Image (cartoon, rainbow, N blue to C red):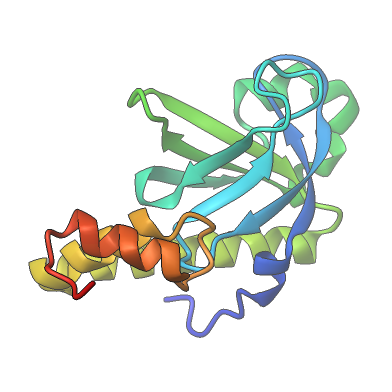
Length: 173
């Protein structure tokens, strides 16, 4: 049990060094969405996804590993091996159900532990919702999340009209 975790710094964005499958590690700003379900960042300039928002769906996380034991880290062990105490990997299933890793190095051990605690707590909350929330509440939550395009946790007028239309609810004109 992680107890109470203050996600506010993660909502604002945390600068971490990201190790991709190709190329050199690069610094990125990672944010946690207000619903605590996604870690998001912008794709690198040199990536084919340039400028696109990338995400790690925390409901699809298989495990979190502290240290540097993934292939991405091993490629740069001779440079970044001294940062094992501030490194972590989030292993998750991507949209094709392939196991991939999000490999990160924090500026210091405190930030690494903070990110680790936040991710663990968010996963626990998602699991609790999945196992303890009624099917009706989960359905409404999914519909809300689908309509909430900016993931702010709030719906604007256009998003409300969208959610009502998708749920086949009669609304006065």
